[in-house]
Amino acid sequence: MEKVPLTKQLVDQLETFIKEKLQPNDKLPSERDLSELYQVSRNTVRAALNELFLRGFIYRSTGKGTFVAERFDERTDVSGSYSFTKQMLAMNRKPVTRIQRLEKIAAPAKIAKRMRIEPGTPVYVLDRLRIADTLPMMIERSYLPANTVTGLNQEALSKTPLYDWLEGHYGIHIVSVDEAFFAGLVTPEDAEQLRVAPASACLNIRRTTFADTGEIVEYTLSVARADQFVYHVHHVNH
Image (tube, rainbow, N blue to C red; front, side, top):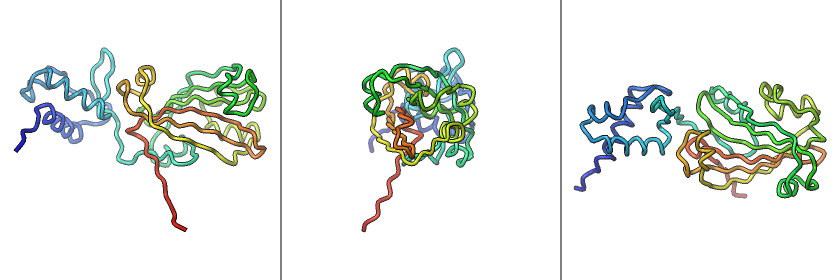
């Protein structure tokens, strides 16, 4: 019988330890303590922790240590259009939206083409980090036509879901959403925000939102953690 590599054995032991003994955001013992506890070298401990990090079981905080990540058996379904806030609430998770940028810019040519407007047309660019409980889930960059959403402000968007704000404040009735999904690798910058390893697998989402007037009122590019999202398709044979 083939012998199980020592690192693989330790990964399995640590995974069991985390599931049975620790809670999300609990701090793990130090590498030295784990080395003594499991009677293995610190290099083996480091390799096992790296594997658990890549799997999303743990995360690291510089200068503080290694902690248990929040993992959920029920992953978020990104099929079709949805409200992140409402979907998280339906799953009994606390949604948090951290607005990182809200700025009016001249639409770059590629964005203008996607939004069916002239290059240079004023648009708002809205960068958001989506969090469930304490776990970073998704980075979103949205573009919205400035002439339609005049006076868009950060305070309002930090309290109200974007689609609710568009309808309630501007009277915009959203009737359809086109979405495209494609696999990718997380950039170092995005990895830091999502608390995953650089070049980890991610799900890229490109969303175009239409109002009943036919106008594109939102164009969004998202980077989602691959370990927290699932794309579900139901086919019916006619």
